[in-house]
Figure (cartoon, helix red, strand yellow):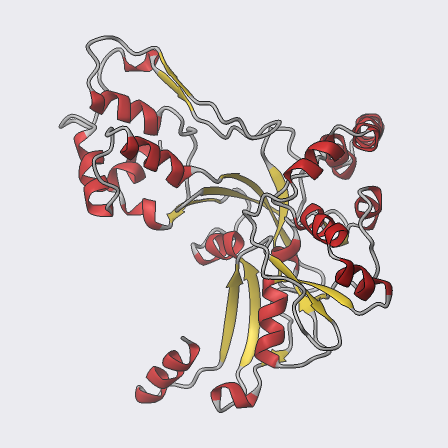
Length: 376
């Protein structure tokens, strides 16, 4: 892809000054530090192998002690970091528990770790190493690692205390170095594209969506609707530990050593699954974008107003993530004369929060009706 872009730029007599990366967060691969041979395939963010491990640790006395300590300390100090400790629990989407599960099962990785020859690389770190072909370079940046369970956004460094508490074998050899988002100071290997090209910045996927949509001021909100839904609120230069279930603080971007922008994020991974369920029971005839948009337009009358009596009807989606994923959903309060269009409207819009959206992106945002109903 990069080669085709370079060829197109050459045709137009354009000079490529630099490139930037936007990578999936929470995907990783561990390597032999000397040979760069991977110990396993890339483990993506949706891998569920650590689910049982997380449940076991979340029910342990260590977690209960951490939460109790955070409750007491935050009551006296009002520290956001202690408030986060009050709510902390392991999630299988984090890298830390998935790495621990793999490490327990792989004797080769255990040997490499004992000899300081194991390196854990996030997806952005692995790609940067491939682009530079520097066998000694392992570097990442805050936005890509702030949701991994390895990073402490309150100290802007690896979360040593939490990692030690969950039994993670923390040392400076195992994890890559951390650079500000726009101060990577890297160039691609000249043999890859026939020239050296500066790599100017790297961002996590959700953070790059917010930044690219212009949500850079405190109070800006970005909603990405694709296979899942991610809501990002720009909290500015202060990190907040929200007490709302399912909301967590992240590094948005760190442009230099002194300037850090933080986000509050909430996600729902099952958006496309909800549409597929509607399609499975014939509530939604087709999942094609044009057909979905046409269906959305049919959900409202000519004035765009809701029908009477609909406010008593509610849909509770599955996957509510306050204390864990719930497989069950519920539709209740509907009356015998409701047709399928009303049920679909409730299915889609009665689960949507009411707030002002600064930006909306990704595939689902192509629906004009969804845009209208999302910006009250």
